[in-house]
Amino acid sequence: MGIPRSTIKNIVKKNNIRINDNAADEIAKLLEKKASIIAKYAVNRAKKAGRKVILQEDIDSYKIKFDE
Image (cartoon, rainbow, N blue to C red; front, side, top):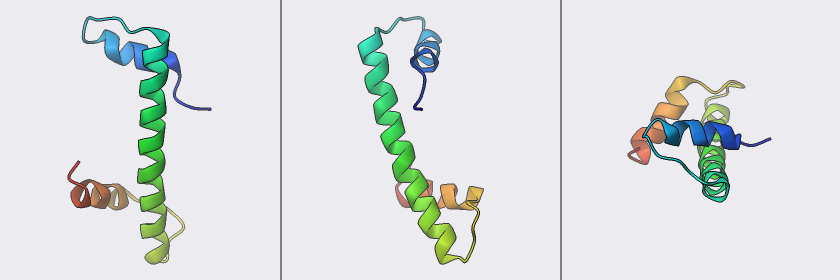
C-alpha cells in the first residue's frame, strides 16, 4: 500500500520545487514509519480506555506527549 509517490511530489511541488523519485520514496517511507508509530500509540491508548475506536483525543494525546 504505502503513500503514493505522486502524493509526495504534489506536496513538494507546492513549494515550487521538484523532487526525484528516490527522494519521494524515502519521504514516503519516513512518513509511513511515523504514521505506524502514532497508530500504535493511539491503539494502545484506546484499548486502555476500553474502546475499540481510535478518537481524535488519542492523536492529540500523542502530539502533546511528544510535542509535535
